[in-house]
Image 1 (spheres, rainbow, N blue to C red):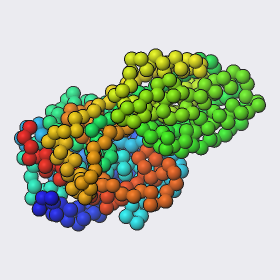
Image 2 (cartoon, rainbow, N blue to C red):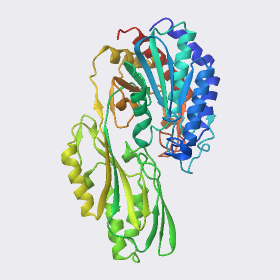
Image 3 (cartoon, rainbow, N blue to C red):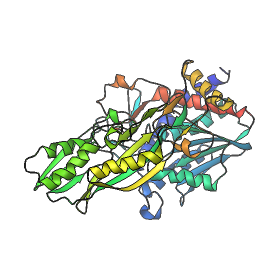
Length: 448
């Protein structure tokens, strides 16, 4: 380990309170992206988070500009070549009302753990990038290469059009780090399919079957009204990349309704089609199951609603490079049609797989290993989707070092990204910022 790294860790420990304070200031902003709201590409709250982030960076010696019309903020520290990029996002997924530690946008610290929506995904990465640069400066390290910091306003929704706009309008870094994934470093991401389905027939008794706001969160609550009665069905939220960790409320509601004697044949047929489609996690129900180096294909439901009498629902499908898209989509459409549903839309976001060799991977992997004291840690392939899929030569890491969330004793479906009581250990966060600083410094020594 480099001698100067002790100064990095000392700086981070000395400025612990400021790091938490600055992170909390961003978490208090309910930055759920809403396309086109108030004339802004991702809405007022997302823009407010970008403005607050830019003010924070600028006040700390890293001048950042908000491109309001494009939905992102960017800072550039001039240096040699195309340099190194740090990419995070200030928008968050929607919330529900079953938080038990605090309210989503009222962050707190308890026993060294900080809680709040966006604490993990991904405002810790945004604040961590700033403090990695500050810690390097405090340790006497000035990168010779150009440093670009990007903060997006719509990573969670809308196909990451924020970073697409960055790629179209800005100078791309030669190598990018995305502190928005797992430990130690990702070498690839699954492809992501978003599918919207609509019943061919119109419901007659069921007037409401509504829940969810995002494709990428397992649906955890559904409100149903039929025959003049209202019911609420509870599930368990999880990131759509790991649907087996959740419990889909739409399936629970559909299965319950199909058992009712007073549900008419027409509505039973429509609801049973939903039930039989979202009853699993790995695509067997829609004839697209596959498995390869990324593990199993996954299939999650995030939204359901009644629209003009039709039952509409979404699927978030994540697939590895073994999946044959051209052959799989017709099978998916046919399986849905057999259950009485038209496929209204299909959007495909292909994944990627990097070569695990190379000097840049060695720098980033080594920094994570050394900071954590885990020389055995190996690169992994992720089920989630990050900005890395939109950038050239991009490596996704975690903003924090590994820590034991399970020891908190939170209920299932709480504590993780996209879940209630989203949280992170402050000690783990400081370690992760140190790892990021170490990675930047080591990459800076490489030639472009």
